[in-house]
Length: 335
Image 1 (cartoon, rainbow, N blue to C red):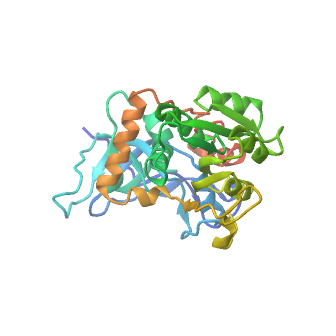
Image 2 (image 1 turned 90 degrees about the vertical axis):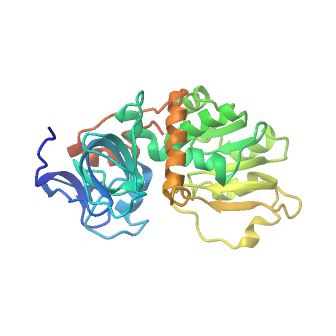
Image 3 (image 1 turned 180 degrees about the horizontal axis):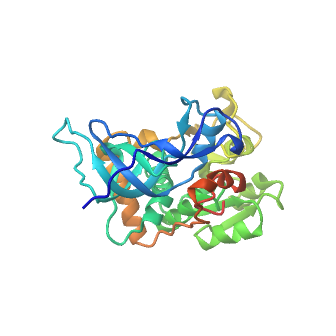
């Protein structure tokens, strides 16, 4: 028999933008009611991602007050009415993972389109700790730039959450991975996960020069850059003729506006190089239910084949602000 659903719950929310201090913890936050084609999920684990800090600081605008968080794993507590015969079907007690809004809470109302049943052999911790990152990494190497065996890849923040997953996935594809990371420990971690070479940008100030040296001046087939402001200019310089530049994060701040002509001749390039440029978002790759299921199933398959989700630490919900102080991805990785 299903447990009674309370009227109030524990939750972490923000009423205004700012630093970690704006995160508020309450134990009497109203439990949401699922609307049509929604389910109410009792969350066991909520994931923390860099994108949470973007909404907290206002880099990404969103209505306030707001319960933060974009993914969680738990069990179905109740099911709203369905207006579509094609809508995914769930029952109370189903073990699920989801990707939407408001996961820093005991309960979340989630559209059924953004919920997946967790298969046997996958833990709640793995699911909540890796769904968004896993879908991001998979869509980057499948669609943003279809990585092939023998491609040379420059991967910034190779010891971060998505970075470690990309290292593993790129190794499996057979790409040559040049990673960057801050410090020898992170460099060693990236190499353990599949990077062929790691440049410590704290010790090697001219990381671009090192990339040139490693590629004999040719540059790389693709750059995957989640750092943004501090690396974007060098990243563009590192791309070879007819190569690709994929931005997918703003860890150091957003890339500033620049004219398209900026990707034309530079000192590292002898002529116009026909570089392809993208600022990807995983959300644009999982708009439809078919897309969401595709990348969700790819993620579960990768987990069963050995993809490792590095969980840094699990915090009580009341200590969520501490996660944002220690590192924005504190529940998941060592990035």
